[in-house]
Image 1: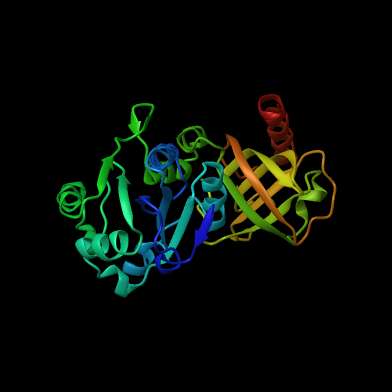
Image 2: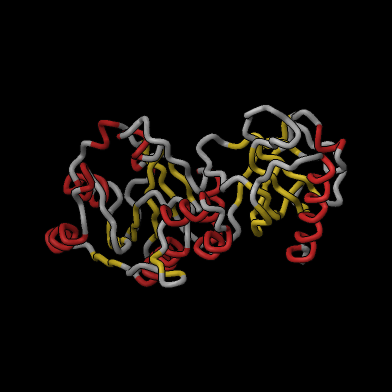
Amino acid sequence: MNIYNSIEECLHLENAVVTLGMYDGVHIGHQTIIKQLNETANKFGGESVLLTFSPHPRKVIQPDFQLELLSTLEEKENILEKYGLDNFIIHPFTKEFSQISSINFVVEYLIKKLNLHTLIIGHDHHFGKNREGNFEQLKVLSKEYGFNLIQLQAVEEDDIAISSTKIRNALTEGNIEFANKALNYNYPITGKVVHGDKIGRTLGFPTANLEVDSNKLIPKDGVYAVDVFVDNKKYLGLLSIGYRETVTNSREHRVEVNILNFNKDIYGEIIRLEFRGRLRDEKKFNSLDDLISAMNQDKENAIKKYSS
């Protein structure tokens, strides 16, 4: 997959078959579009192209809006690579760029610069200044400028149309099962292992404290079973998200994982977690003995259900 940091780096493609959008999470709806993108490109002897933007447009248009993302740029690149995309363009999104009308965007960028052959969009796609561009406008432009236009219908899970927003909401509610089905992979977070207060090891559950990208969505506080990847080797882990009120009065929010059957020093290393399932809510226990008992039960439940 070729990766470009602007449209200007990717000029004069051969029969470009293009889709555009943020593709946050690259969920099953996005995957359907990419599959169609590649099939259409092969049919016409062209190249598949995903055009996205960085930073997220909402962060430019509404700087105070707190948008937590399903995928970092690196995660997005890794997922797209697996689906055989030819070209991934990450165009800078600025206030000036946000003022370009939808018509000018199609003509000046997609047609003149990318040599647009076919445009494939999702069922509810909008683009351009004030999100004025839509399918009806694109139908008129496709006839006027001679490019093919394909609109795909929504992909559903449990009779619910899949969207990045619905997946974010599910994770915020701790609904890992729905999120993983909608993504078609286990939701990941990646973080650097940093020093903590080392209380976990005194309880028999040493933990790796993670420093996670501030723009990455962290699921609802609680305890989860996760797969942990260290040096390309997979381990089962117990992930705790929250404030650890039983052992400290600190209001520092922590993401920390106890890696089962693991005793290496990994401070400073980058590790990846993939959520398997939610074990329980975060809880303040009456004593450390009660906490240790609950953690042992979490371990037993995780091994029983997710060790395979």
